[in-house]
Image (cartoon, rainbow, N blue to C red; front, side):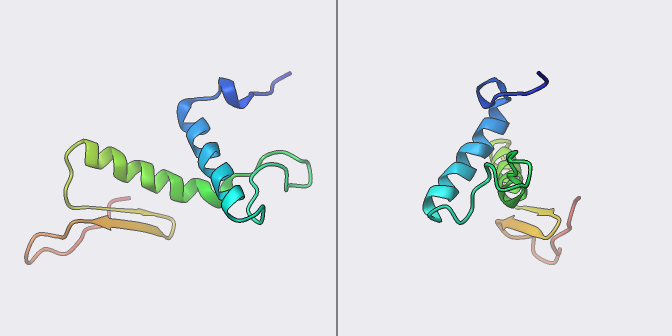
Length: 92
């Protein structure tokens, strides 16, 4: 049928939808990634960019990064601090 059910999706996709479902509960349904499009299909775009930035930061921390900055289309997370005399450098 060409459909992918969530239980057959990649772990990252399942993780993002789990977060989106938690946000639906926390917002009493004001944010609902499942079925608010005209065609009834899921639309997680309201959470996916922030989730991907968080995942990038987590991966960098696991790799041992201490001073990092991730910028993704307006979402920014910076951890640590730049070296003295050297400004943050944005890598996209």
